[in-house]
Length: 264
Ligand SMILES: NC(=O)C1=CN([C@@H]2O[C@H](COP(=O)(O)OP(=O)(O)OC[C@H]3O[C@@H](n4cnc5c(N)ncnc54)[C@H](OP(=O)(O)O)[C@@H]3O)[C@@H](O)[C@H]2O)C=CC1
Ligand SMILES: O=C(O)[C@@H]1CCC=N1
Image (cartoon, rainbow, N blue to C red):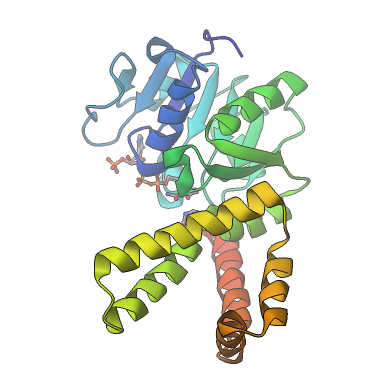
């Protein structure tokens, strides 16, 4: 990808939009001067050299690629014409057909990064409309590879499910970690030690999956077979409804993802 690509990010000062901009700049996909970012209220004091505007049509006109990163409830108010530009939405729930119609564009991609984009460790599934070319696909890959890893998926139903699984995903180890820290502190462990220990566990488990390539289910099975403290904990957690709670949570996220598209 060359540095001349003109990229616009609608909502570029937000949580996810800002994380994508930082990743794009770190990867040198473009220069600050070729970036146009939009805000709603006040121009954020971030990304020196980039052009900030409150006018989204100006952003579109200055860009070859337009990333849309406003909340689903705010996107109906975005009355811009993208024409032949590549439009990449990272909004949960909003469908390709809705995007094409609203932005009057036929090169449209629906992607779902996650909060780990802030540290270049997002996983981003994405799906493209029929008008998206091979060259467009390489642009999409380069943007989301800059944020972590990515996969093109085959249909929007997969993306709806993955919105709840990987889009929401960093919150789930955080939920487990928060519960573990709370339990440790309740047992008299100092909050610092509890936090350091639990953080090391989350990172260590991730590295085991990534570097050794063991399936998580195999890890669990190895510990269950060991018949020690871990097996006792796993069996008590499962008896307490752990697997059912995870399934119920992911079903709720999927439902919300579909509802977001219908209600926006
Ligand atoms: N955060 C996450 O972990 C993830 C978020 N997403 C998706 O990313 C999108 C953005 O979410 P997130 O970054 O968390 O939300 P934020 O609220 O942090 O960011 C949204 C930004 O959009 C701005 N904005 C709203 N309307 C306009 C407008 N008309 N023109 C220009 N800017 C506008 C807001 O400005 P202001 O502050 O002035 O209102 C805000 O800065 C959502 O659709 C969400 O579904 C997807 C995956 C993960
Ligand atoms: O919670 C949310 O709605 C956003 C979209 C997916 C992940 N975070």
